[in-house]
Length: 355
Image (tube, rainbow, N blue to C red; front, side, top):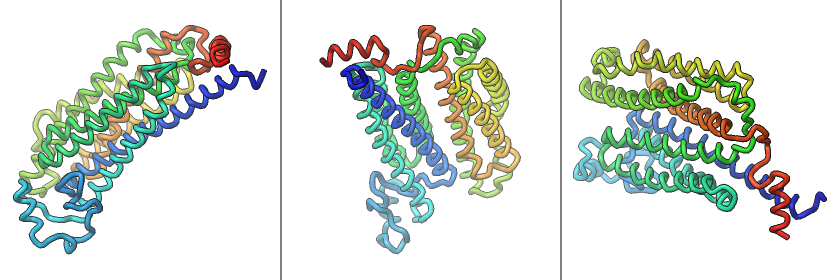
């Protein structure tokens, strides 16, 4: 009957799953926006726009002009180890908005964790993945404070960026785990067997490229500082060999990603996989364009954060595709769109338990 206990239980489960997925996907989007803003902060040199943490120039809402600061503020911060702290309203508010988005991200992951609590009974990994993401966000906040305290130590900046990648991958894992009942194994079996190990290789190569890119970014910062931020057209020529390694390693990485994205698109896989494959192609092309523009246009400021952002998105899309393929291969052939606990047998069992 439509108003039976089993039907009600099924509707609650379906709503809980839909609510969690919407929140988790929204959180992934917010994290990637934070990664983009973080790249803008670094590219514009706004990382020390707020020389203290969690306040900014000792205030919860930063000033809008130097007149709002004490006359000796530069001396105060020089005593704390910051040799040159000159108030710049653009840099200060860029960094402050980055911090606000970080706080908002923390709340988004908290809500995701709360919505995942339903899975503690039906699918515990979804809950524990969400919990791990929330814990790491707290660690990320602490690490951000260390970055400021260290006056933007390059190693800590790289670690800060890598931890963001780990957090977003945890939430993506939770999403795919919660969505797994809708993944059709039949479509995935059409993919060539070689695509599975090659996806692993592509992800590892992409991560290596991301790490090399951060090293190139640090080298650019050093060259810029040594040249007193002048003669921008000469910076590329003064970069170490790691720039060439990053540049030429990108060629096989691009070819490999385009190949398996093309194979997914041509294998009549699920709509979700085909969409992710198309997105991967677009991101690969966008990353290549940004990389070439940095070399040909003397490191334009807009290209640096976009290049990092596209690379981060590529890693996330690769990971999502890998998880979907892995889960699809392990699903039974008759896997359908039922969420956890909502199959006909599950609804009957749930109905008897609730009764």
